[in-house]
Image (cartoon, rainbow over all chains, first blue to last red; front, side, top):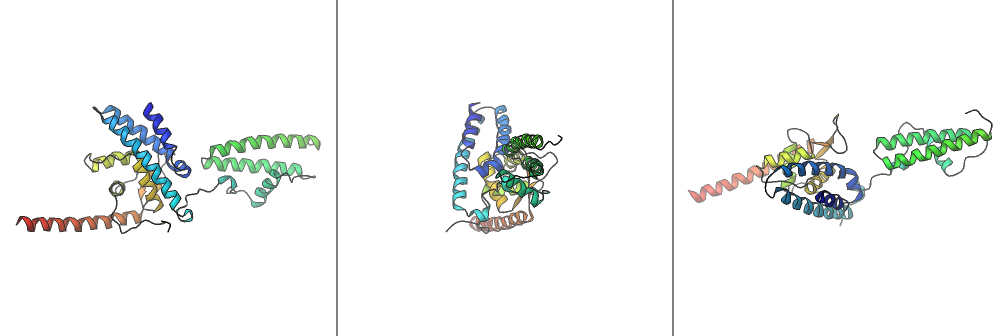
Length: 163
Length: 113
């Protein structure tokens, strides 16, 4: 248990982009390897723990050095922010309508249509976030979508429109 | 000056050589790589996860290996396979090692004769 906690703690030392790519896999591999060592006799587990923890510390240092000394345009060490990207299948007009709504520019008789567009946009973004394993982003879009639905309900009441 | 590319004519490090060798016959995920490398090296080399994934990251960047889509692939269990460039680099390294072992064997024979 202490070994697993120490491993998780040291894993946090790695750069964010590296963690996004490998942390889950590393943890899974470590758990399987630890299970195997536990079944071995003698000091196998102690040796394994020592090697793993030292390996993580040197690995994290090496990754930070690589990140700081490598040209990001060549190595692509900065992953794109998927929240800023237009998801595939979402028309440009619809995407920017959502952006305008979020800036508070939606008003006038078209505001109901724009609110509906915004909900569709948020759903598309949420689906895209889920497809890219960006679960915090997906949760954020889910909250925004709920709020957008509430706005739409109020607008429909204001304009005496059916639900 | 910023370092941007690996020197491809330099000898491979042992972990990199063993990873490429392990992937030469079939794609493998992280834990299978650890087990196979231990077997290839007759139990002499046991890579830590930090060393393994550090090497995998560099090999992915250099496009010597690639992530392999499998039906049961998840973020926790990702398979890797050699690219044609990785296979070529492994051949180059094998040729280099063959030349060295031939030279060493010839020197030993001369000394012992």
